[in-house]
Length: 139
Image (cartoon, rainbow, N blue to C red; front, top):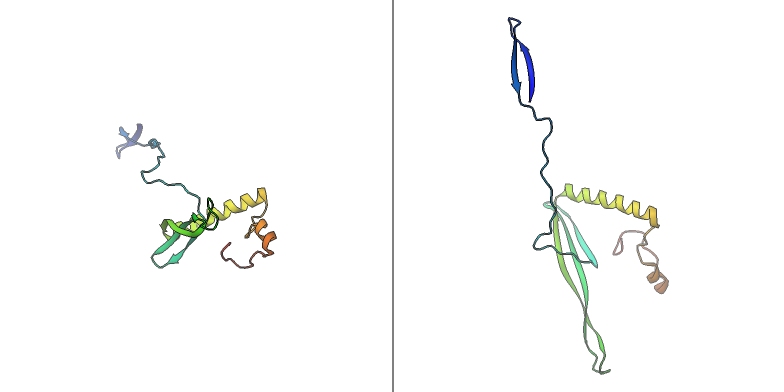
């Protein structure tokens, strides 16, 4: 509490006690994982902006195997299954904020460890493929 002395029009001091919040108490902040929390590595992402907001969809690729009838006791690839694991809806402002944050993180990472190739070097050496000059599947 702060005591303030006021002078009235008759120049007689009067005392008034005023409550002032000099600092707001910050409640404890706890981070917990929700019941549906999930952590996974993604193999692909797609999405974009539209008039109602922005969407990011994250995918996993799974190799589905089957017995190899020509080679008993062995298996072979039956198909590759792509499953949509997570779809995130964002406001354009949050989308922009994430893009800026990721760009800063990428610049910092590449500053420490060197440029990340759009196409993995091992794949480039194996196929002779050159990195794309415009963003595409790998960029």
